[in-house]
Length: 168
Image (cartoon, rainbow, N blue to C red):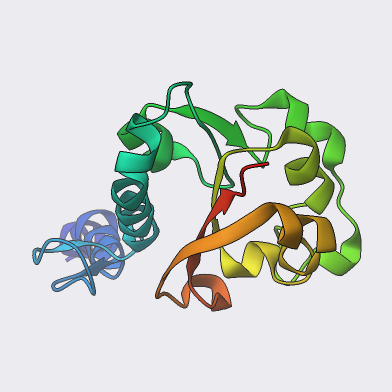
């Protein structure tokens, strides 16, 4: 009896606990069992944005600078120069943080001065990253035009926004 109880606690209980973190039919992506935390809808949206910008990025005579807060898929798919607005891959971004607290709707916001100073050719962001600061900034509104809005409500966002710098 003691051996049976040991097996339950040592083998079966941890297995059952691990299975709680899995789903048989994920909400997006491939339809096969996967961990519940294997969520990559955001990356699929960035891939869509990269595909949208593909022709604009490759037709330029000089390499474009693309700004984003989540740069992985964009950098990988486009192969263009990336301005990481978080600063992990672009140390020049770090001096713009901490941003004005009024810019934050969630735990991340893009400071308008970062974009105005660095002048990226394109910007791809979730709307919520710029809602209270960047998108309302007068200089940003003069220098950038919205090209496309990919529908999403990730992080309470009103879409993924793709901007282009207006030629001078």
